[in-house]
Length: 268
Image (tube, rainbow, N blue to C red; front, side):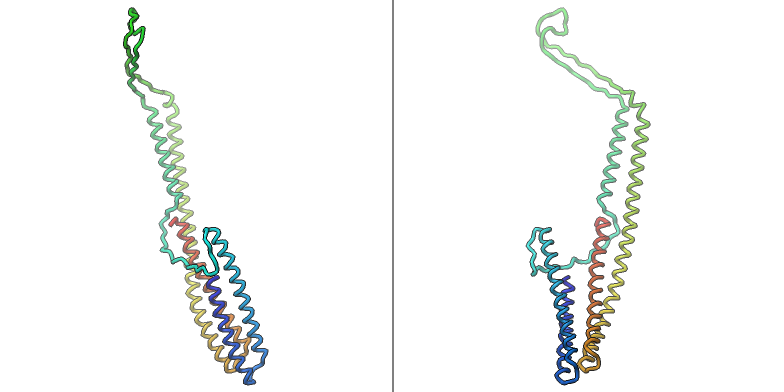
């Protein structure tokens, strides 16, 4: 909208220039007053367009201010972001999630193998009281028990093979999910890269079209001053140049949006 407002100002200047030249012809009796009126009507229409654009800009700024907790008014200047350095390296957070899940399966698999091993532990239990371990004495005294405990759960042997196969299957499925995600992301990046190329080519043509339309408009301005063309013909060329600039503005924004969308898809 900022760019459209700039273009609107240029368009008003072009129309006002046409009014001044046509008014001079009317004063000299070589043009009709209706030609001036047509230009003035178009000028008022352009002023109305500016009112609508300014109102929409103000509305969007208010919404943006609420979203960012900032006081944004009509005087707020918005700068377009710089062109990002495009990178096809995929750094999406989903890839980290896949890696973490795979590590989790590795840990569970190691725990499963640990469960097959026999467990050996030493223990010591000491007390002081009566009776002690000496059954023929009722005197107070210390006593203790120490030893080695051996435990081997054989049931894990029966479920180990199935559990191991399940972990292997889960890891394989996770690898397939990761590969599919990378593949689909690359497809999306390919399509978005084509959009970037398309808008870049359109923008190059837009610049050529604007230059040509500006040249035709300037020639029409001279022709209007000399009474060769009518004010209606002049307005046609002014509108054609304005439309060409509008298309260029649109493609500039679309190119920038496509570039940032590409970076977002890649996780950069």
